[in-house]
Each structure stands twice: as structure tokens, then as C-alpha cells.
Length: 155
Image 1 (cartoon, rainbow, N blue to C red):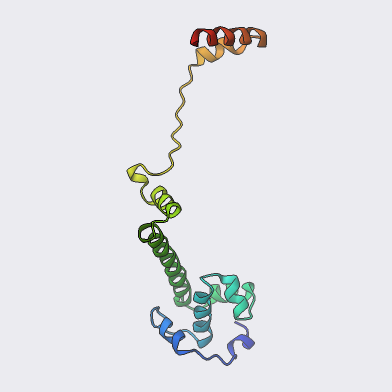
Image 2 (cartoon, helix red, strand yellow; image 1 turned 180 degrees about the vertical axis):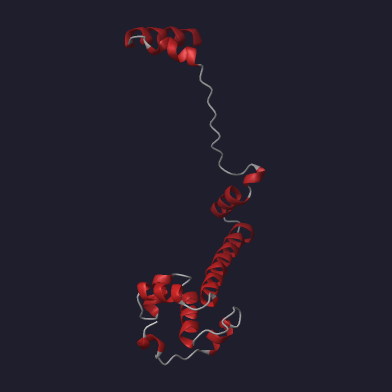
């Protein structure tokens, strides 16, 4: 991490410290902790977090990949998974409590596949190769006459 980033005067609010108490931040710098708070506020979006912390994504990725242990990476993962959990909870609330039709349909397709609610694309086609080959050399005129005869039979 560059010295200008490391030497910033970082202060954490009471709310940020409360949030940080929910994840493992042992050994992390104040700057790292602040980035985690901003990451959460930006709903797990790395680009938005970098803009909020006035750093480039390139610096962020070099920094995260070269850090001495994986505590920070794990904290980022926890935040991003927590946001997914929040999204899932909101979707369940919308479907079950609010009875939102679109949410009910989507959840059914995704979560109830094993009960037959998913979109099924089980197209199994058996082709009789003799039948296909029988008509392969026919002219368009001959095929048209055959189609007309078959249509008459169906009426």
C-alpha cells in the first residue's frame, strides 16, 4: 500500500465500530477497517468503495493480493456474503409476506426446482433416421403434394 494511503488520518464512527464488531478485523489497520465500512455502505461494490476511499481499483487489488495474511480478504468476503443474505431475506419477505407475484414466481423457479417448479428444458427428440432419409431426396414439388395429402387426411 502506498504511504499516502497508509498515513491518512482515519477516524471510525461509533456506527462503523459497531459494524466492525460483527466481523473479524484483528490485526487490520484503521484504513483497512474504514474500507470495509465503505464497502458495506456501497453494498459490496469494490469500484464504489475505491471511489469513496479515493483509491484506484488497481491499487486496491495489488494491496489485497499482497497483504501478509488473508484476514482482510475474509472480511471482504463476509461483507459481500452478508449483503447477498440481506438481498435474499428481502426477496423472501417480498414473496411471502408482501405476496409479490414476480418474487413468488422467481423464488419458486430457483428454490423449488426439485419440486417441479423450475423451468424445464428437457427436450428429448427421437428421430427416425429412416423417415428423415426417406424424404431427403424429394423435390419441393413432391414434398408439397405430400403435405397437401396429409392435411386432407387430418380434416
